[in-house]
Image (tube, rainbow, N blue to C red):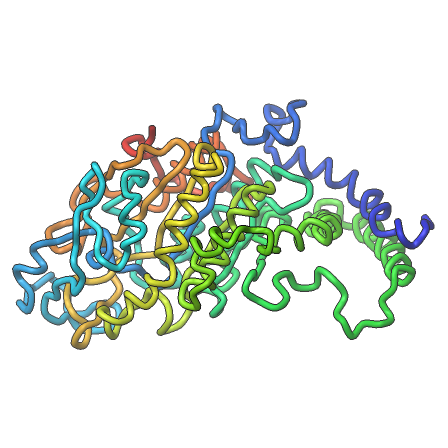
Length: 474
């Protein structure tokens, strides 16, 4: 196959990837019942029932956001501040239990729902009537890595696909020009587990999260030849692609059941399209100054997370189905892992995200996207009601808070309750399985029927657990 150099990439990729892509797509939709003739743009219709959600943006607070200092108001902590209470444990994750510590932040009630919110989230507090709170989320572990895996993949060990990969596998792409699943990390670095939190694991490799860094000088690695590669020309690219096509076909003949080649071809095909679509998608210059200001791009504190949130909205507009936005890198500082000094550490990290999150919610509303977009705010676990050191809090898998907003969600509601000290769940406990089941339900998927055969087991995101949380659904 020899084409004029200017057409070589596009024609080669169509030739090499089109057939495999079609076969893969039918497979990704998951069976005969999904292989209908409905157009690609209507994939939000769901696969088991009609969907209420077309796309999802998940805001993940890496490190363990303190529930009693943000959304879970506990007067008992104030009343018994400084007391030593026996919780039946001799040690927390990294420390011995100290005395009860009240929240150092003022709580107020907001909205018609009267939701209590602390002073670290003044912007989000004004939108509580749009949010549905899961007040008794629980984890099986109080260790970052396993807890983060659990909240992302449904398992505490590595090697399992994350939520975004399952959604990509079940529903495919909304647009040919952008990935189904994109990850926007904190510019300070990747979270605990690094890429394990957004891996496709044993699902076809094409469904892993595409890592894009809007705050970096080069947001998408290897999308274009490096500036110093003067020998890379259209003609040399054409020759390289021709060789690649021959090698790929030889490889496929010997390994017809290997999804990695198929995924590679699809990734090259998508990369070629993203050379056109991605620069425009990532270019915020066309946004109004009012929009820049709303997201906090004019403030060095809020600008990094604000840029990620604004980019997430632009991605959702252009057909990315699942965008995961991270706050906080892995490590002992500059995230939500507030072991040492809650009064100073928590406002620092919350101040980076409060305004951008509120701006994202308002922006989605103004653009009519709130009606078919699901927003999920979560973390991997909570914090302890007693002190670590003088004013820090240790890890606590016993209870934490998640909230949802947008399509199919009953705003101004809450479900579940922790005990008087926000130490353990007390009523209507929910797990990652229930959150995932609810997300899939809103996307038109029965979580018990979205499976993939692996090592003789029909694996699913929710393992053998999970219930849709009907109480927060509209």
